[in-house]
Amino acid sequence: MTRGGELVLGLIGVVFTLILGAFLGFIIVGFQALIRAYEQDMINDPTVPSHEVEGATTFFGFLASLGWWAFAMHIIGLILGFVALIMLKNNPTTSGILYIIAGGPMLLLSFGISLIPSVLFIIAGIRCLVRKPPVSFEYAQPY
Image (tube, rainbow, N blue to C red; front, side, top):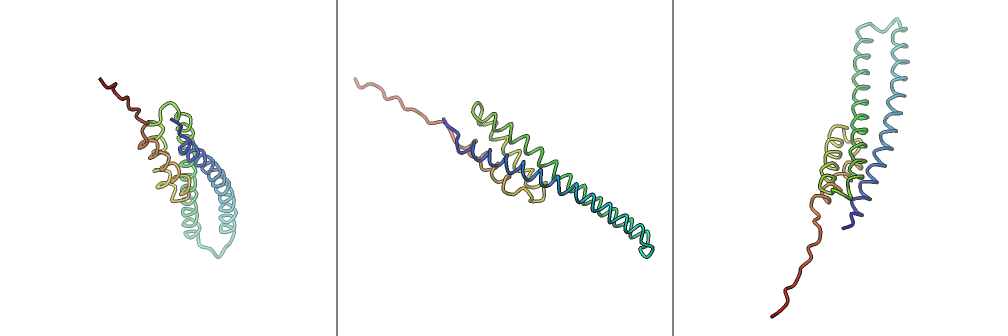
């Protein structure tokens, strides 16, 4: 049985996850450089109290950690999606479970950034689990 639909959905999901992950990585690195420059400006400004500098530093650190968390979710989803693509031909049930494991947490834990690849992974996973091989009927010979 061919699994062309699941293959295409999974491949598009992997490509989107790769693109979004790379884009997110570049944004995080650029954001951290911007944060460092802004913190340095705040430290050098004598009118800004030190407790405000500490609060801003803590907040920016929190935002950076959320960005790295979303990036990690994309990398995990990318790896699971790629493994599911490889396993699709030989074991579609395991591949479907891997697609769902890749799509569900990636959607929830990356704050909706990866909506399109997550939905594609979930649809491919459901199709792998629901679709059964065709049953061939053998008719008995009449007497």
